[in-house]
Length: 88
Image 1 (cartoon, helix red, strand yellow):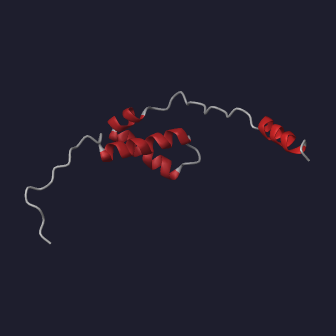
Image 2: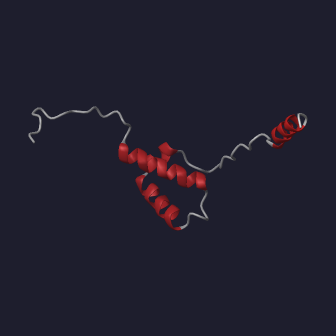
Image 3: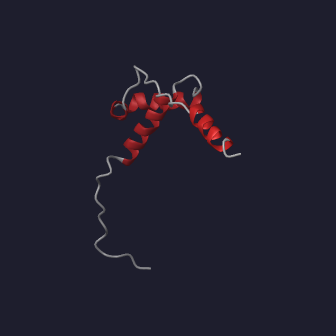
């Protein structure tokens, strides 16, 4: 019984190998490039919605990130409260 636990531990650890690194697509534009071209971004968003299975996941994920970046901006907009507080 004492020898089974270390054996199972060694077997479980040997079964776990190095994880594969994801392959980078060579022709996938960056998020900044997509955010700079709204017409191309719009077209790619439509394609990702309708043809998700034929397009690469990396491209569709970058399209989603670029859409968020265009919508939210760079995040450096300071909060400017109104001069008079609202009355409730």
